[in-house]
Length: 197
Image (spheres, rainbow, N blue to C red):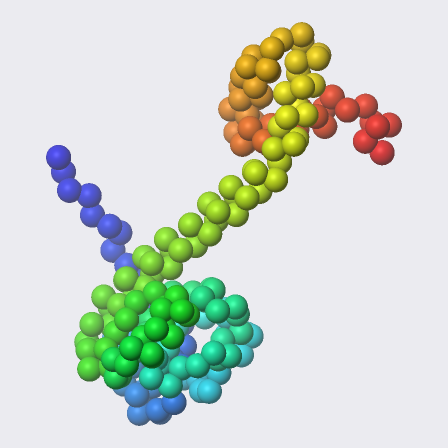
């Protein structure tokens, strides 16, 4: 069986923010990112709301604290790398609570590319899980609509619930939507206009 390879990541042209107290460290990190074609800007002590548009984030774990980010804890809108100086359990726990996507020791800046690849993959997986959870919750909220549609089809076509559900599944396939959305479409079509108003 042939081996499948993950896509090759290029970070050229992306914009990174480096949230670190030390200007010297920010400079070293920016130099490393520059080798990868990444433009970098330093920030301290906190990010501003407009910083949420950056492509990448490098965060100092040693001096990091709650309230530095203009988003809810653990919901960074971009891949983030934890820059680790001292491996203090409390500091690492804070980084995990923030859901930073990859860890890079300050002494291993030469591995920046690997850290960015891991951070990007972890971030994309996190976004996909959140999207699936939101879709599951949305569809669960439409269960009553699905039941109403099944009952409507049963009445209109004088068939049992299994056959009515099969009709809705067929409609969902034709429309290329979830069966719950097909149920909403069917109910909308079969509701007289005066009743909709």
